[in-house]
Amino acid sequence: MNLRRQLLAFLAFAPAAAWAQPVAKVHRIGTLSGGFSPKAKEQPIWPAFFEAMRRLGYEEGRNVVYEMRYAEGTPARFPQLAQELIAAGIELIVVTGATEAVVVSRATATIPIVAIHVSDPVELGLAFSLARPGRNLTGSTLRIPGFTAKALALLIEAFPGARRIGVLGNPTQVNYADDRQALERVAADKGVTLLPTSEATRPEELESALDRMAKGRPQAMVVLATRCFCYTASASSPSRRKKKYPQCTASPKTSRPAD
Image (cartoon, rainbow, N blue to C red; front, top):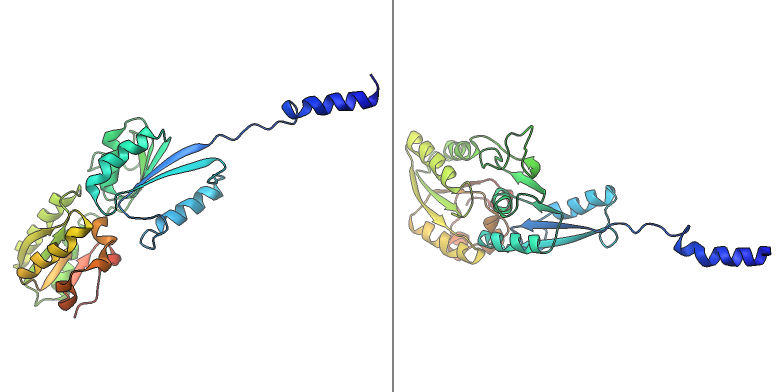
């Protein structure tokens, strides 16, 4: 066989053999959040997350696909969305809060979960300890022991004339009952009146919840942390626009200057 025929034979077989490169595996990662859109300004975490993944070599459309689910400010949708992610065959789930983490951990004990900004994973039963989480969950925590109680105490100190304190909360949040009890202890100690919690579980309920609170004539307000309020802060009710109260909240997105 002359040189020309040898080269032709090599080129004919090389693409299927020696020159072929292994196809990169495409990973499927699910995300679950209480917000509305990955591009919304209220959710700066996602652009940072995607950039960090790119730096690690994971590029969307090449070797990773993101299955993103949003509860639209309605935590009651989390169980359904978690099941959708599991059915989509994802290999990892990234969640952005305690309620999401609890729901997903109940839905699967095998798919790895990365939880961002979970208040207290040990107390919630999501981890054995912060040093050794165990189970199928890891992530970061913003745990500040006694934060809710301390926030109310500081509010009363800053506004000593506020003797009637309104509370805005979401009963579907995993820390809801504990936070309310912590507020009641501080209110009793400081001698102020803590009004019944005005509850909202969906963004469209926020306006009526604020209106109910206004009927109690509060002089200040505590907003219990929940994305239902963080992502809908601009949708304040007419009563809130007319009368603004000094308030304490875990998220600056829900805060407004007092009149």
